[in-house]
Length: 446
Image 1 (cartoon, one colour):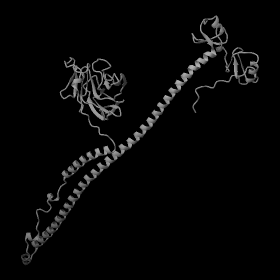
Image 2 (cartoon, helix red, strand yellow; image 1 turned 135 degrees about the vertical axis):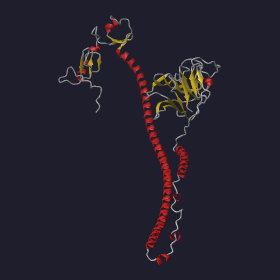
Image 3 (tube, helix red, strand yellow; image 1 turned 45 degrees about the horizontal axis):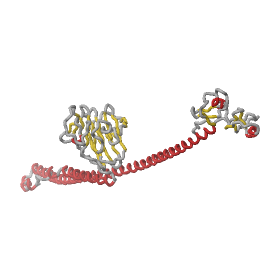
Image 4 (cartoon, one colour; image 1 turned 90 degrees about the vertical axis):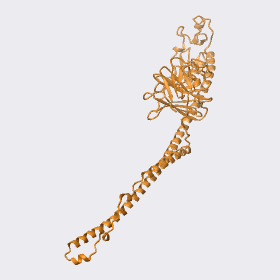
């Protein structure tokens, strides 16, 4: 059982009762605590300040004048006695009765309590949303697991069916060859028996002593047995036709590929093909060299003289030609030849004519980037998060789901590792974005 962090306050007892009973009030002037019986007697004789039962009266009196603290100094925000306000250090200050000061503070506390209640309500709503979100995501995870399991079961079923068809063809050929060979062996064994009989009869005639019986027996090799040269030839037996098997596999795998795509669509897994991302030379800063095929960008120490187009950046960064306004997109970038780099996304309306956070990718609310400078980090709106890695990054995959508002970066290792995901609401056209630094180059892997 969880212990209460607040200890129960000890009961204040009546000063006069024997045996003692709990007090209901304490008198600051008398410095006594009283039960309801003695409180009635006290009220009939004097008009003192009564408060809720207290154990110590020292903190209710002025440490200098030893008088009851009846007033509140508005200038110094402290409780004072009558002597402090008349002759002491608070002389001339605005002072009010403690009750009045307490009432004013309670009015402020009412506002604070109202604000706290509203803030508490907001926190409850956020908590409720997070709990509902967790529940929804758990449901999505379960549904996605089922879809994936069902998809791979159907894939396995189709692969197994193809395997069974191919193995059945191999077995059919094996049976056919075996039957043919068995028939040929049977024919050869029959001829072998005839040959053995002919050999035995010939031996008998050779050993016969009666000339007449030898003469009377007609013995010709062609009459004894006729041996066909075709019977028992290996070529007649046939061979395993691997060509048919290969053709079945080839055709079956092609059909499986089409079938897998159909299954993928049926299970509501959208198609995600590589987006053909090319660099836009008109956006490239003058220290960025673009290859002729528009897939490689390199840093140039000496600035290149280019027309100052409206879309050109002042800094060493470049955008893609293509825009993303809807759908799902995927592209890969090789960064192994760059010491410092950034890859990501930027809105078409990003500032281009300033060397500052308004332009730099990852430093404003119009761009998102994964960057490396001794440490891998993900940045948006000048807020950065360190990204742990298992080793050097050679290439990065990027997946954009525009409607869902997700931009995910992958390390293209074995296995593929998710590095970071940005969640945002995309409302305008987006471009793939790249930053180059000294002795660095990147290449888009289309």
